[in-house]
Length: 170
View 1 (tube, rainbow, N blue to C red):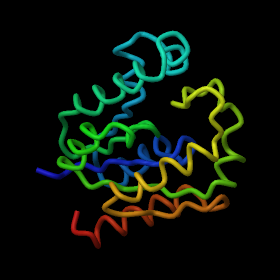
View 2: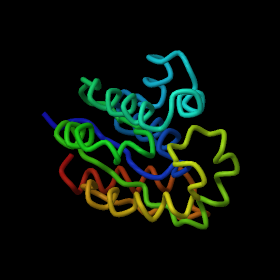
View 3: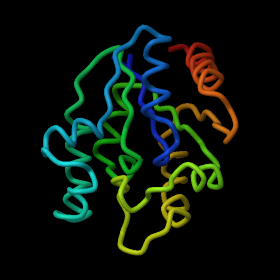
């Protein structure tokens, strides 16, 4: 049964913040796969990346995605979940995938702490490089895309996402 909402998008796109509000609007539960990873590993995302490496982190992310067994839930995924094909195929099978599409300049403005936020990045990789690598994946996995402009209010984005879900038949 595909009765979940899966939010994907770049770090800083608002998946967690919007997810909570969207869950309240729809009367759904809310979970954040980043919190699942932190809880399972007893470490922050950045600690996992720094101490165990990017590949281990992505393995943890994939496991978190595959471990979700819920109904009527909004699931905020980590920004790098789209790099985990098995997890994304599974999540797409249990819900409607919404891509929160934020322009790169807005992300640059929002993300002041790229080195400490727990963003899955190769050494020396820039936000622009991450954006260019992941955007085609977000677009490919998305059932719906919700553009999120830099100045748009959260309520407007939640309303737009809810309207699209309703018209999508969710």
